[in-house]
Length: 328
Image 1: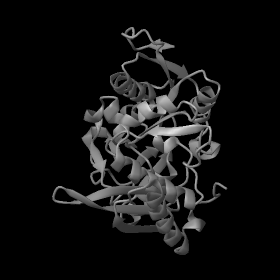
Image 2 (image 1 turned 60 degrees about the horizontal axis):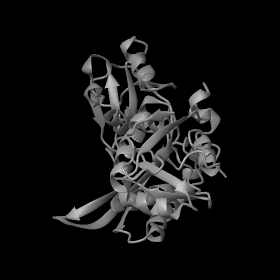
Image 3 (image 1 turned 90 degrees about the vertical axis):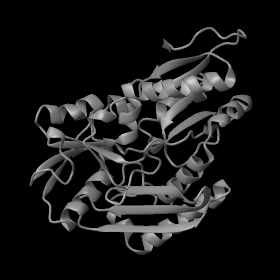
Image 4 (image 1 turned 180 degrees about the horizontal axis):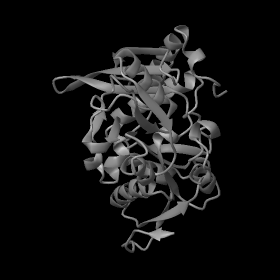
């Protein structure tokens, strides 16, 4: 257990924040801990929890992806061992247990994927036959589809490991490049190692990518209300739409599904939400990519309806056949 706090002025017991042990998870949780201290006036201590996704050496697509980084944190919440937990929202299953509440989704970081390549190369500068590492079928599908459509030849290589391990494959010359979430690199203070940010028109991010989820027990109403002060309404409606699309496709976190909802502004007035979705075969030979635009949702139900509507259109275009085994 790591105490990242000073004694609380009012003498209340510190709030216990459950977090994975990885450097990235600890960095993310540290940021949330500081924000929670500011809104509650209470000390916060980090409680490190090892998840199945941290200990398994199998590729995420093989172990299912859905919930492998989340289950142990949720179990600790339900047992009362921690007061609240921080997740990367893209790791969170789309079904929400009744006993737990998603108390806050803070303002989202950059949702894009980022390239870290040898010799400072951009994606367009990579050599013919470049080997690109990623643990994500979603990234593989879109990178391979882009390469096919532009006459490029690349090889996508499945990898596991933390940020140091993945970037190490490039430093050691085993791979020409790796693709990682830009938000994670930013939270680790490592954005300077990015050699190219992949446009969302080329690679749509995972649903919820760049956003954090703060979860607590539904019975902790006062804590949930305090944590809700950290919620960003635009991020909340965007990720709700993205995750509703994922749920309607009956696809898990490791499926080759990308989605991004972004608000569109006319001057200073935000008036529309655009939702884009993609499903593809990992070799890039088939891709279903659609988008829809509507008024900015004013409720969870409206945001979810937008996601379900786009998913229905994608399924009508053959998306189900591109996802392999669907998460039922």
